[in-house]
Image 1 (cartoon, chains in turn red, orange):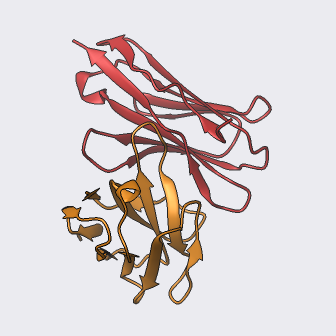
Image 2 (tube, chains in turn red, yellow):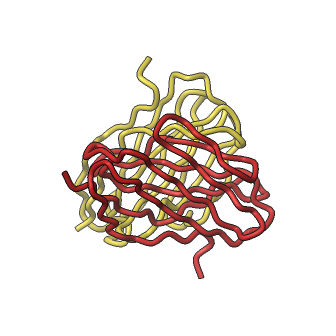
Length: 110
Length: 112
């Protein structure tokens, strides 16, 4: 079992709809959680970080964290074709090392 | 302000050849990292440097060496390249080990 798991996709979502991306992790001591976006052939760029249980909103993006169930999710509202990318979940272990999921490929269909 | 820069952008090597990947950051960050990214797998940490003068092994250090030349620069060396080292290599930096990591554009390496 991988330490950070994501569905590889592709996840296909109509333009204007809500895209929901999920990530589970195994280290219960993890305290910090990150969502990065990676366009094809480009480097990862940070979208959001979340540290406490609950929701954190930033524009069209909402990150949700549930430490008891060991999952973190990313919601993208009003999805745009420019949101088409691979979304990487990263979890910081209790020893501060970042562990990465393999990513979910998201396709927004016009 | 260039952020994190990497050279070269693309390289083809023959098995057994050596090369050094260069990384530099101008954000005055203390921590720097080298990752590799392979299809279907997450980013895997090769080596990191928590601060100038220190380096530590990550998840997949075999076949690699690193040098933290100064606060700005962190290089990755392949002494004897193998086809299994064909990958995309990313350098990243952060203020500290607990903070957000910022990535360079990557180096695409093909080992024949």
